[in-house]
Image (tube, rainbow, N blue to C red; front, side):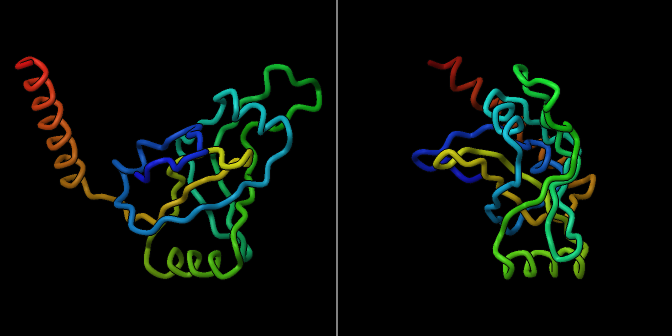
Length: 155
């Protein structure tokens, strides 16, 4: 995963994406949000569970992302599970959309962060991992955890 740059504040990470997909390309996108959504995201109300990016009518949409209602909102609060439009340059949208439709790849959200007061989303082009790849990832993670514990015990 990319390191946060100076002035960035990571709001949410999609840790499952790296377990379920082999991520190749990445892109930064803005999100079309309403006011209470931004306030809720700043409070930590963003959840990526089962979310993905869909190419529809020449545009990209974030589907399945849950943004909790704003705690201090009134009857004008937002709909928590609506599809949200992603903001990219047209050539980036067409490039990513062409790869998704042609090669059996999918676009997944990787992390959400604030940059200069704007909510940004890092999306990745990924291919689904097979079961044996997932087992390898679990084994590697267990070995790394065991070595960290052994080093900590030595000190």
